[in-house]
Image (cartoon, one colour):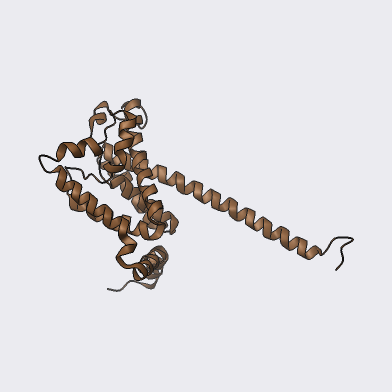
Length: 245
């Protein structure tokens, strides 16, 4: 069954720029365009194998396990690696698929360093929210129960959600971005736990960054438009008095 013309046009508007960017970058650079995503998949898989060994569990926990009860400097040191430590109670294949797809698309659209910055920022937002929520307590708005301070906080999900929202904003895929946000809200409504709350914190942080970038872009556009108008006015006025033509 083929799509109706209206649905086809909507799909092209929504995903056309994104699909074109990914296809062109892969055609030009091949697997090198996904070096970060492939490296992240390999690192996550290696950590998964390591933490399931008797000798590897404690080292992985010492280097990459973050809890809200940990001292803040220690948590900040562990946060970058925690992004690549899969949760033990979830299938690792889901984490690997998320990283390959979302990190890969983000790497093509944003570049490696911006992808890393957004992924780390989203993960850090979730980690810091957990500490703030536990400090507020369960009776406060956005508060968390004290037991959440002992929950091991690892995995790429907050980074994946943050990157998805950021890429959707950059490529103007508004419907897809709204679906991602809605899915995370439904997740919290259905199963209110620390992971779901951290996903919303990551989305909030990314939306703030997107809003600031949008505001700065508009200001820059206004300044550029003003400069063009002033230049045109001076050109239309011609040389001033006393100037030779």
